[in-house]
Image (cartoon, rainbow over all chains, first blue to last red; front, side):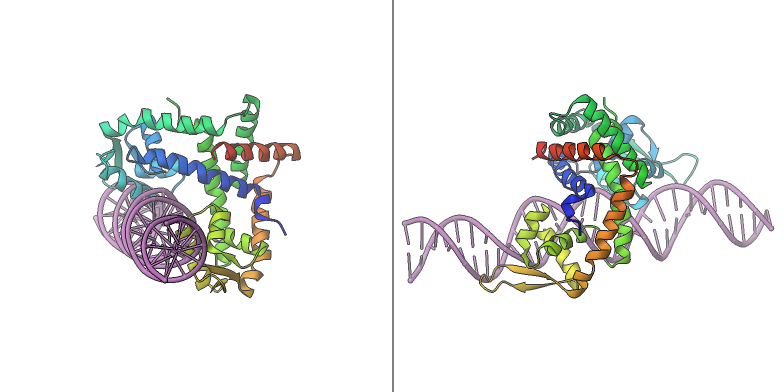
Length: 140
Length: 140
DNA sequence: TGAATTTTATTAGCTGGCTAATGGTATTAC
DNA sequence: GTAATACCATTAGCCAGCTAATAAAATTCA
C-alpha cells in the first residue's frame, strides 16, 4: 500500500500550502485575502470583464466569483456596474485603489516566486513548466 | 508587469484545482471530502495518533484537525478516546469502516496519479520530485 | 406572438483552511 | 505547595471553494 508522501500529488499539496500561506501573509498587509489577487490580475490585464468571464478565466464557479467580488467591492477595490445592453450581466471595474495595487501585488508574487525557485536553473525551470502543463492537460 | 500565467506559482494553482476536484468527486462516492483522506493516510500508517501529532504531520492547524475529525467521527470512520495518562490529549483511532477505506482510497489516488503523469518518463519524474522538494524547502 | 430554453448572477448551506480567544490539564519554577 | 508557564483541544468567526436551488433577463423556437 502506498504511503501518502510517495504520491506526487501529495508533494504538490505540501508545496502549495506554504506557498499560499506566504502570499496570504503579505496580501493581508495590503488589505487582501489569498485568491482575491487572482481576480485583480485578470482585471489589470483587461478591465470591465463580466462575472461569468471572470469565472471562466479563473476556472472557478459563479458563486465563488460573487463572494470574492463582495469582499473586493466592500474594500473599494473594484466596483460593479450593470451592462448597458444586457440587464443580466454585471461588469467589474477597478477603482483607483484597485489599480494602485498592481505594483505591490505583482512585486509580492515575484518575490515569492524568486524565493521558491532559488537554485533552480533555467533549463530545469523550462522542463518544469512543460511537465506541469502536460500534467494539467492530462487532468482535463 | 508580469501576467499571472507567467508565474510558476500560478501554473501550480491551475494544476491543483482540477487535481483536487477529480479526487473530491471520487471521494464523495465513498462518503469522504477532499482533505479528509490525508488524515486517514496517516492513521493507516500509524493508528492512535494524538490530534496535535496529526496537525504536525499534516502541517495544518489544530482547529482544522478538530473540524475534520468531527466529520470523520460523525461518519463512523474514526473514533476519539482520551489518552490514559494525559487528560489533555485525545487519541484518534480508525474504526473498521475507516480501515476498510484504505484500499479504495489508495486506489483512487493512484488512478489520479497515473492519469496525471501520463506520458512523463521516469527520469523526468525523478527530476520533478527533486525540484518540488527543493521548492518546498526554499519556502520554509 | 407566446412558450420553452438558455444564460447570468445570487442565495443558502456545506467543507477545508486560517486566527484569536477560551478552558482544562501538566509541568516547571520558586 | 503554590504560582507561573506551557501545552492540548475546542469554540467562534473569518474567507475560498463547491453544489443545488432560485430569480430574472435574453434568446430560441414553434
